[in-house]
Length: 211
Image (cartoon, rainbow, N blue to C red; front, side, top):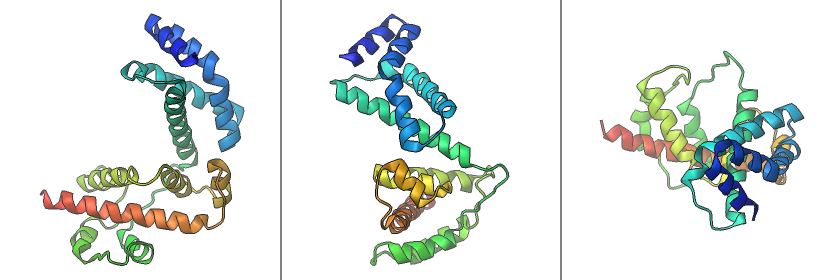
């Protein structure tokens, strides 16, 4: 199996392992980036090299039971690198966007659970309202750590949808990238966003009580 050759190569040395990894899976990883996410060839190779670098650093920490197990792990790393690249590409310098928790209230109320009440979170909303994501402050750190944790609790598709949409990709572009139908994609985005916002409130509330 190819993955066993890769592992054996890394046991000999990183250069050997990276060469076998590239020869065995490089073309498929590159093709995945270019066809699935519609980036150009130069960008595709940049992301591929990033994936090879990442794998080379961590592969010895893992054990794999089958070819499918290894391939799924490899493509998950690569997909994360593609999304990270796309986020960086879309991010505009000096484009400061404030995190308006008061807007979250309306979204959670409209798309969240009917039994969920925001009354208990009013002190948090006052404390974290209009946090500037580019300021290095305790409030910023707590807020974004909570958001990061909340993102890990939604499905992979929801997480990809949120990250791509928040970086200004259109629903049509996202549907092509994620290979899903555009039908009701906006509603799915808003529901996923409300889910993450609700969970962020809950995590922040626990942090708030630890003071």
